[in-house]
Image (cartoon, rainbow, N blue to C red; front, side, top):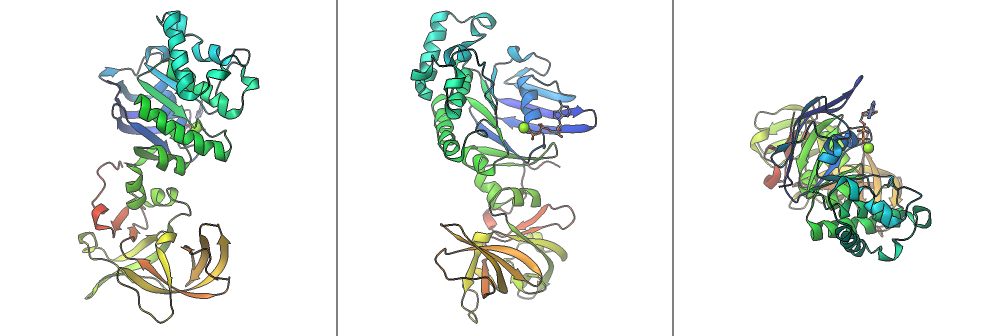
Length: 381
Ligand SMILES: Nc1ncnc2c1ncn2[C@@H]1O[C@H](COP(=O)(O)OP(=O)(O)O)[C@@H](O)[C@H]1O
Ligand SMILES: [Mg+2]
């Protein structure tokens, strides 16, 4: 069994708590992505899993075994690093197999067979005799992956393995990693600061901040019902708009009142006892531009009378920076629409895509998408 269970995992360096009491389970065969900003403790967590750091507190289990105190080579894991970590004077093949003969009981025939298999999967059979200097960045990264694959470990640990590749290659390798996981089915913990990588690769995604887990959920669920403001703003590009509002119960239902507009909120029990300040969140793609004077269509709420301050044509979409009542927010619209800075626009928002957050703690109070608005079981702290 290659499941992983972390219990209260903590790693402190002098004055920094890099990993702060993490409880997390990864199931056998899962592809789990850990995402968060630089410095939030992702690498430290992964290094604890690999045995390269010893935790200050807590336990790490692989399957049924407590491996917390074990040396790296006594754990059945293989790690892939951002900077490839290849030996420059060894061929690709030697880099892949180095240490295998002595540290393990593989016969040389078995090692050859595994190299051939890994080379085939990674499409590097022609490159095995080359040294790293004669390989491109993408090829080096494949060799580094090959080194992990030939060990056929219970768990792959990957620390930003695509960060040093150019954008195009990164997208291609992303697809290949997904395919590789489909083929091999090896339990994988993958660390990245890139939310697109997290969304596309992860079966479940862990969002981390300051050494703590913010939310664990499948990608779409993170996007649709973020547990707090941090997750809401970290996942999605451009980020979710956040505006301060007053919540008010009216005979017609709850409303979010902003200085310049008010939006009606689909009724929900979470809002029964709630009144006063809140932060309203909605994504740029959930806003529509409508004709002035027409009311909101069914399923949307508004209007918001706004002024365009900046236009950013992105090819597939036009990103508008809008201003209403002294607040700025973003709107995504048809790239071929004729919009200019200074134009006045009337906007409505999809009423099934509204979010409310506590202004002090940032915790989500409400998601108007009924399917997802139940409190998140997996949120810690
Ligand atoms: N060996 C170390 N000694 C002291 N502080 C460290 C060490 N390794 C990491 N840290 C600190 O721990 C925090 C988390 O670092 P890291 O795990 O590398 O974050 P990430 O991989 O998410 O960017 C940072 O504040 C970093 O400076
Ligand atoms: Mg790191």
